[in-house]
Amino acid sequence: MAIEDMIGRIIEEAEVEKQRILTEARSEAERIRVGSRKKVDAEISEMESRLTKEIEQTMNVSLSDGKRKAREALLSAKEELIWDAMSAVRERIKHLSDDELGSYLHLMLSRTLGMLGDDAVVYAVGDRDLKVLSNERTMVRVLEGHLMDREPFSRFKGKELLGGFIAADRKGSMVVDMTFQGLMDRNEERIRETIAEHLFQNM
Image (cartoon, rainbow, N blue to C red; front, top):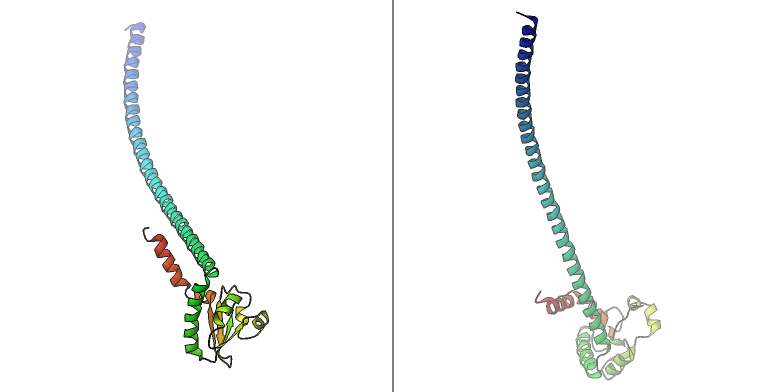
């Protein structure tokens, strides 16, 4: 066999082998590509699923936080309205007409004397209260500043009493607070509930 034929045959076989290797390489590359694609797709799907859950959780947290803040804002607004209403009640008490003031004070005094006796001493908070009570069957004095420095009146010092009176038995051992502020303080919760019912009954 001539050298040229041998070289030609070797080249031919090499070409066949090259094509076979290339074919196998392409096939392997395709297999790897397909496998990698599946793996990448699976990872992407898992990431999307995880991100979706995280977004939902974040949205739920944000929604919950938003609802909480909305509730807090609503409660704060309600509390402010109740406080404004309480302030309006105090202002209304300060400006009672003489007839209204007399009606309240006579009823309050009757109850107080029932507890302390007719010989109780009554200390009117202001001049209007003194004027209304001065016709009663008991001793009525004005609640002057110097009284606030001693018992049992020192606990009333510095307070805006709004009107009304403080009564004490003759010995000074029993004191009844019938000031309008005292009545409001003792009944604050019930007053707040009543105001809330009227303000927010349709909410």
